[in-house]
Image 1 (cartoon, rainbow, N blue to C red):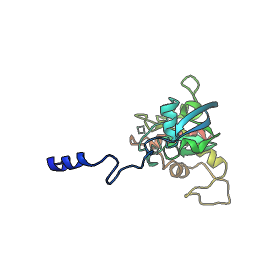
Image 2: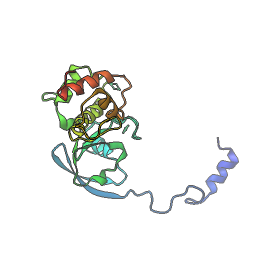
Image 3: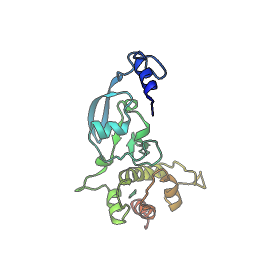
Image 4: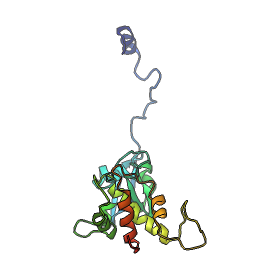
Length: 199
Ligand code: FES
Ligand code: FES
């Protein structure tokens, strides 16, 4: 708590003086134009350069399927597919993706036309509260593409053989997508089925 004498001293301090004062002009955000292709549609935005890709989608494009869990790259709830690779959209600035192709959960499928991964999550009960689910599904789609492309993971034993869709591979590659409801085993089953192996 600030005492009366300290408060009086603070009130007497000239504006802009003292520790923590900002140099003139720094309160004004720096704006930049960015064009993205989001779910197949070109979107032109003018954004504060500090806007994350997640906030650009949620706050400016009103695509709220991608979730903000931690905003620190630790939970995976914000996962999107950018130019074919999954990323944590909270950890990247929108202005870094000029011209990029971005797929969010809304672009994978819709309730009347589900993506096979979405349908498999429903079939295998791959969620409970659903908060992590858009990120899980985007990650799941990209993980199967990574395996198909032969990209190894930490648990790939033989780097010279084609990578297999095993439970160990799925669990390792999905380890950045946290589910506090603990739907992990059902998510593995859903992904295994989409990969064309018996779940
Ligand atoms: Fe991006 Fe958690 S919100 S990783
Ligand atoms: Fe609730 Fe994953 S379904 S956090």
